[in-house]
Length: 286
Image (cartoon, rainbow, N blue to C red):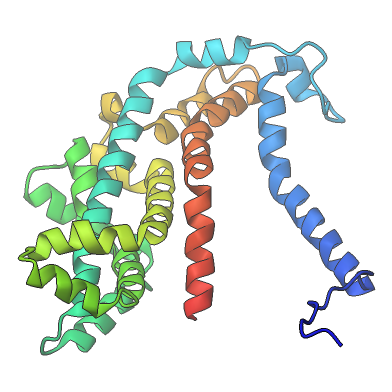
């Protein structure tokens, strides 16, 4: 009798596995359908976009809609504004979340747990509740009507701090103590020792923050107060809905939406490996 055992493998998948796989495929198709329809519609002519029953595939795909979008809105400036808002805000969230998460995970101070509980409680506040107080604060310090007013109030994020705290708690204390013995400062420990150990969590937070602030609509619209030069792309796209009201311009809206979705999609493709790793790590720890 051999001393080694072979791992058990299921050669014939059960009916439950087949049903589960079918449900996954259906869910993936349903989730991807709006994106595929949006891209296909962006290549249609105005007549095809209005046709009933709808035309699934454009007969003569054209890039005219994209050229027309560039003529209706200042797409380059709007994309730049969105990039500044999403990039700077995300960078601020990463820095503040990493430092605060480190303090909550590795420091012992009076009121730490109560303060952390209060921080978690703010995550349950709907954004509309904090809209007016934040706007009054931004107006008081003179940042309304500018990109700084859009960015500054969101440089710290309760969810980011919570996420970092949970991952940093798993970093061995011996590793941090060894860095202190070597004379490393606390900031160096955070960015040179702790940060490399929680790269998957940082990547996931980067993805969440970038996508959210790229797509945010209400807050920039409130702060910028009609300053169209600083409008991000998601607000500029609303002009396509009212452009040339005498004709249906669904193809224009779809072309603009396709352009707007590209940066977050590229960000997801670049970070998906780290994003999956963060989910796996949290599942193992949990």
